[in-house]
Amino acid sequence: MTVQSAYGQLRDEGLVLTQQGRGTFVRDPSVPLGTEPGSSPAFTALAAELSSIHDALRLLGERLDRLEQLVGDETPPSP
Image (cartoon, rainbow, N blue to C red):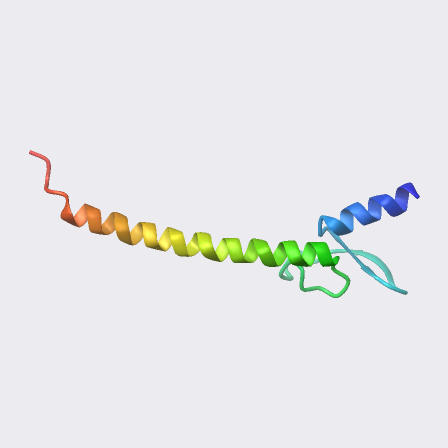
């Protein structure tokens, strides 16, 4: 039971994949998270949520860069 519990924890954290009839495998880090066959549903949902958060942060960063540029263009030079 301890080993099965450990496998379950590793699977939930997205570190390993379990394929019925084949076994448990270490996840390939070059493959996007949550897209591999055998990913746990909870990890797949978490990966999708993190991806959307990442996209939102990127867009906010781009917006902040544009706003800082606008403010910098409008700020009079220091005497």
